[in-house]
Image (cartoon, rainbow, N blue to C red):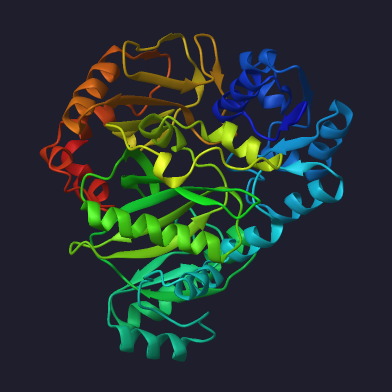
Length: 449
């Protein structure tokens, strides 16, 4: 086991990793930018090093500075968290070249699964259903037209690199297809340095369901059941829950088994998430693999009782998984609301600034993961998420009521947040009936706001 770990991240996830390491008797090295200087959570690390100016391109994304901090701090391993360098295979490789363990999969797995087209090929090879589409990358417009005519409109154009909805366009006709191809390629090239795209049949009102996996270096792979992430806006998740309230147990079992097959086939290790879309007939199709810990990992922790961050560290240090598939329970229902410093009444406009007052909800079954506190100034340079509010109850209806109470109790003054948005969603009959799909928020937002 490691004596010291560097955390190549900031904010909520950095604090989450510090806490796990403290419980494991591992010292921590934090890094921070000038924009995060003075953040209270940094005091909980054993060491903290400034790695550059506020802009992430000059600090949290500077590989040489992160490695230097690890070497000066005497860290034996680096945990990348999520975002920033967490899925950067070059950083992964450099860590290992410097004899510093990267707490995550191998660079080869990261490259293979990070390319969505290659990942689709792996899914097919493992017998995992994929959405009908092009066999490979689309090389020219004429090929795109041929594939679209074969699978039928509407079609979805997807960038083979990256995520977050960038490089994605829907085309309803041949005329729209040509324009959408150009837009998707341009956006993907600017965002990821890779303009390659492929085509899929567009599933109009899908649910977004994902499977959490853990895999050790000895070849053992387990799933930790599913999470439903259908409440989202512009491909950004807002509310997550486990288990998914819309799929049958037979579908859940088949999806989880498919995720395990794919991970085994890819010779993957550490934590990862296999993402699927589910149509109105309960058919599921592979989307992608996230080769890192997810923002919504606490939802899985609550229903299984397994600490995913500790599991990541144990696997990276060479330990065998301490449990088998039959040991992993699925207990009750957990819901997570992402709290962003955004104004939902004004198009979710970012609202950085000073948190003048923060009262955290509590009581049985309530969890609040955040680095924010009264007097904390939310910087304008990074993702707007300031925390995650979670509840865990025996039933979904009880979890919804618990979350509504926790949101009512939560007090954040000085900035706008998405707490009021979550309260509105949780009161909708569509949420209670579990009929929300990934486009629900965009279709109905004008009616609420």
